[in-house]
Image (cartoon, rainbow, N blue to C red; front, side, top):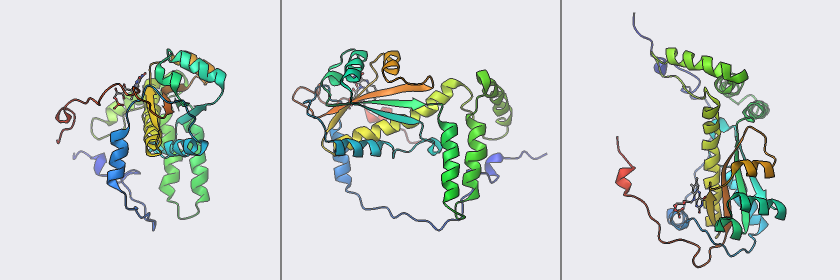
Amino acid sequence: MKEVNMAEKPNILSTVPEMDYMEKAPNIDAKEFQKVIDSRRSVRVFDGEPIPEKVVNRCLENALLAPNSSNLQPWKFFWVHSDEKKKGIVKACFGQSAAKTASELFVVVASTGTWKGHAAEMVALLKKGGPDIPKLAIQYYKKIVPFVYTLGFLGVLGFLKRFLYFFRGLSAPIIREPVTRGHLRLWAVKSTALGAENLMLSLRAYGYDSCPMEGYDSKRIKKILELPGDSSVVMVVAAGKRVKGGIYGPRIRFDSGRFIEKV
Ligand SMILES: Cc1cc2nc3c(=O)[nH]c(=O)nc-3n(C[C@H](O)[C@H](O)[C@H](O)COP(=O)(O)O)c2cc1C
């Protein structure tokens, strides 16, 4: 009997919906973009002058434009305003100078508990889009998303899915994760970290600097921000304008040939 190759069978991911929609890509000044990339450095001492609210809001909005898995937006960006909370977070960051001197502090959080509600919201929004919205998209959020992300009570469904995926995967490509809470956390953290990068690059583009930090006591930060149990603190981002001595030397990277491989 001939083996069936699932990868070659039409499925929800391989089917291109018939749509008459186009977004024109604007011309970009690549040199300016390169300047943003090159000049983003981790700055550990800031001038402490507040960043205009308009700029911060724009940078935070840009963070939310990062690509994210299934568009389920598993993130939250806390802009820490209260002096008391700021003090607590600086302490939780072990008093790192980037945190201590920051003009603004952001706590970037990934959530594993919001996907279900967000999927339902996506269905509602897609339905509002009218008859032109491909049925496949709605089906994706109604059927595929719950199947893939539900781990069940005590992770029992995840455990069962591990076997299902293993056996189905013997003959065809199959999704393998998430089947554990760790996988689900990784899923949320991946997208959220991209949001953090958007935030930092946006700050640079608007003339400000940043420092991502994971040197912190996550338990204390969760307590200060009263985060629910499904939250993971992905990064604390300090922001402001650099001062002399705020960058600890020229940028160091290993030879790119070690990390970029044409295969
Ligand atoms: C996830 C993550 C965690 C980091 N944690 C800290 C930190 O706790 N304190 C700090 O001073 N820098 C921290 N950094 C900054 C790195 O040290 C820095 O990105 C690296 O040395 C490269 O320098 P560059 O950002 O100037 O290119 C962190 C960076 C990332 C991406």
